[in-house]
Image (cartoon, rainbow, N blue to C red; front, side):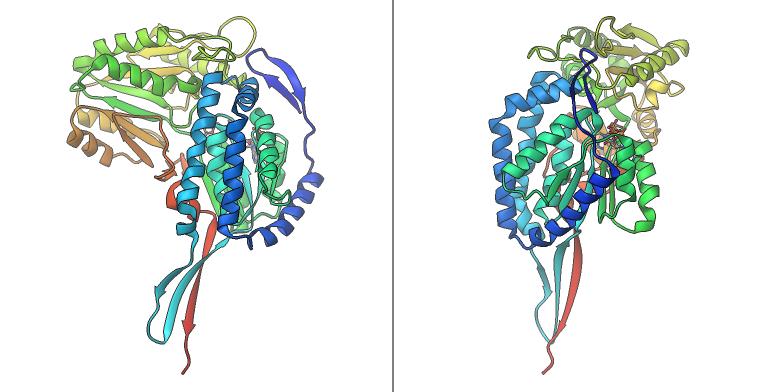
Length: 456
Ligand code: NDP
């Protein structure tokens, strides 16, 4: 498989792909390895994960360069991701034992009722490229701590990073037959769907997620899907500082070049502050430094996938034809690499693709609203349900709106953030099941109920 640097368009590495045969032989080993791994104490499993975290932090500069070279993510943001993902390990260290230990529900009289949490077995983790540390850790670290073995398939756009996970997990003491990385594109992913696996944990697009769900349904094994979004933000007229709200909103929309599942993808602005907000927002976006992702001061690097350039161009053209005002950007950037100008479209409405379809790039649609009711209706007008945000000075008002949102996460005066303490889940086309929190640990085990009767 060729590994392309999206900032230059040049192939800089090649790596041998797995075949159906090597995949099945890895799965056979993982099946054997899991039998011993599930007997290792949780504390010892956690010790391996902690060591893994330490090794990753010790090597973060090299690892950040690898991530940047294959995804085009600005180096500072690669470093941020590697540093930030450590909070999953801290969370597991604090809570895993508590959430996995057997529970005694009834311990009196003749009948005792207990629950034990058993690992699922061998799980497949088919992952995405946009935040491979965050979304990878959410699955494979939690699965390993719960006593499963893991077949990890990185996205073909984050292959080298996936191989690093394998190297460092093994160095940290996770046996080779407990974690294996497989290399390949979607066709290898398809073989995984046909293989014997005890659970599928997928992060990626709704299209692939839905295909996976339907394909593996006859197996009757757990399936968890972390999918895309079209996340709305509503800015009310009572925000204290319109300029600061615009700066924060722009960061939520453009961080990682907009390639975040929970990036702000559409903004509704109260009419009283609309002009002021739009001006401050556009000014902020125009100030972003675009360029070489290896430069620590770059905020906008290249897109990861060349094909997304066409999607973004089409969304801009569609919006402009239907009456949107292009305030900045709108085109690909000439020269090497997959660059697209940070783009702001004002006067948008829901006839436009940019307000309905996932953009997954540096482009945003802004729309004026005249009431909370109108904002709520528009925010809910989507097939997705990952996150929704309100910027307002009035907590009660914001919570009232957020209570009506049909999304797994809601934000007041913040956005585009994830915490390991609370569940990460999508509704509707944004997914199924939860990672992180107690629920994200329990996702990797199956309960067994013990009814124990003392016979006198
Ligand atoms: P894709 O759906 O294109 O790919 C995801 C993974 O599935 C990749 O490893 C891919 O392999 C693999 N794959 C592709 N075809 C198949 C198949 N037929 N069977 C099995 N596996 C297959 O998504 P992207 O990688 O482009 O990720 C971007 C999407 O992920 C966005 O929609 C984003 O919103 C979403 N996302 C959601 C998150 C969440 O937490 N909700 C977090 C991060 C991203 P390959 O790449 O090698 O083709």
